[in-house]
Image (tube, rainbow, N blue to C red):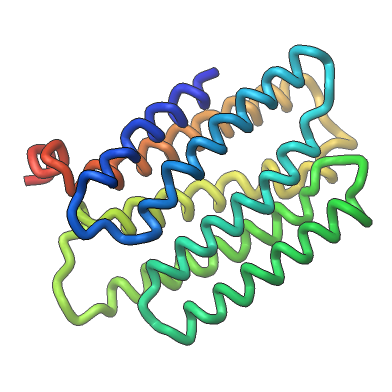
Length: 213
């Protein structure tokens, strides 16, 4: 339930983007994405309550999730050749992940797809920071939405990879305590991710100017 609260809070904050002048296109995609994320979490909780499996739901949403973040990174990164590589990679990842759901990891959570998607997001997020620190002009990072967004997804996928990316291997040797601890860690990571998204949405608003001035 805590995750739902932070997603909802992030969704509300994201509507501030539409009232800001010269908001980048990728920022305007966050409200519908966060709305979908909120719906997925609500449905997933409902499925658990009625005793149904929700791994298919999360596996399918994972395809959308990584496609979205890879597209965001392709919009943020300035070098055209790298942007093109990211978009080609995005299409390939969708095809590979869909094939994995249909033909390989059919009866479990698609941890292979998550591992591959996480690796791609982490690599291109690192490249963003590499490009950022080589940028010739001064950028005030606290008021740069892309900085907060990339910081959030880089930290989240670096830390969640060992938990979700290795789900299949860990499932053979899990205990209730291990599952509980993993859930707590993922909840904290999600809360941090959506908190950084909130900062990204508000850093250019009047609230952001007051906090970061």
